[in-house]
Length: 381
Image 1 (cartoon, helix red, strand yellow):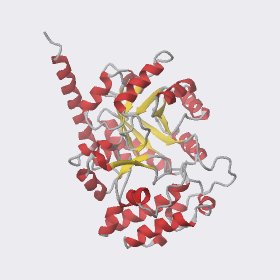
Image 2 (tube, helix red, strand yellow):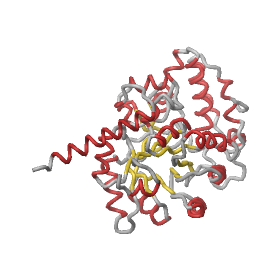
Image 3 (cartoon, rainbow, N blue to C red):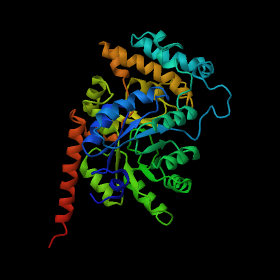
Image 4 (cartoon, rainbow, N blue to C red):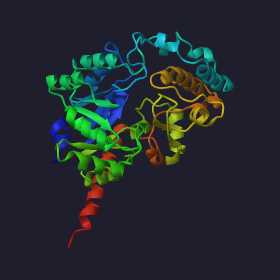
């Protein structure tokens, strides 16, 4: 395709796939798209194992790495931000509420105690220093894009990209955020509407793309990728008709054979409607869209809920608890199954089956072409 994203990244089709699963990343890139590995849970040591595997399986095709460097954390300015130290500051009522949900479902709360696997790492969740060190380690591999969510990338990240000749992308949820990204010097803007899974703003994708393009064009011609609820090639074509240079996708890859999602979560995706993707703070402390479950309902709607803690404190409660939930559900605990949740966008309502990741890419291509042919036919004499 004649396309700025294809030219910039060396790909044949401007479909970018964000995934925490290396298998998805490799499959998408091999199929002509561009896989982006989500490295938020990794360290400089563990990232090499994942990227070594991708290097061996991607067939020489390009791929990228996404980190999460938040601009604002509740721990800003604190001297000791280790998980163990921060855990001591969590109010007893919040931990008790989480433990109570698990105990009611027959899950041992001791599985979430400090010293469990989640708490073995020294750094806090979403630790900026760890993210940048992990990114630096990732440059030992032939990555072709780095991306950041939750704010303007730090100057050191942008400088890192320039030093290695690798484009820097950043996600935005409002037009004013896009202007800040342009001023900071990013190379690609990902305009993610509220329909998207994970951390998202409140503006719909259809409106956001047009607002961002209108805001930045007097200042910059950098490409803008559309994100938020995009599950089909027709949706991708619609966004590109608005002026987007391609699509950044995430939720669609959860419903693939290769994804990190459990079979139980994939089953829940197929059964869900778009209204079951709720934007709540009860996983990370910032509004993030995820699948409605007993966990989200209790934290958001129970009169006994103490409410979500700010980032990163909430993750110190939710992640070990939800890991225990997943383990119990996969072991046959039906009550735990109700608590199972994960980040997913409103496009979940379009999921009706589980496919292979490469097949998803091919389906996107065919659907995109069908949409373009439909548009072309509407102006034929």
